[in-house]
Picture (tube, rainbow, N blue to C red):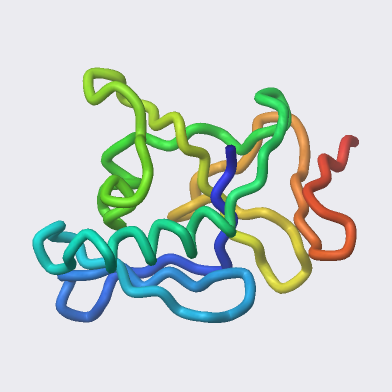
Length: 128
């Protein structure tokens, strides 16, 4: 599964992450779990799940270190995998204005191919 977003940044105070969904809506995720109750976390998790697409493993963006994903509070909404392993099971990529996928914090998005996502065509692997 790949979480697709338009943007990810920390708030000016560094106490929350601001995630821009594909629709352009901004979702604020506190970095401390106690800032929201269960109902609010369920609501935010459901919104983020609507940003997830299923892809074949070989077509997925590169895995990110769990610490990178935790910096944005996503561990409160998704299972990231075994904490003793460095890489998260959740893949995350940013969709730019042209539909091309970019890596989080300038990380390489894929070793061999360009990846794209468009609402009319879906998730695509561009070879060559």
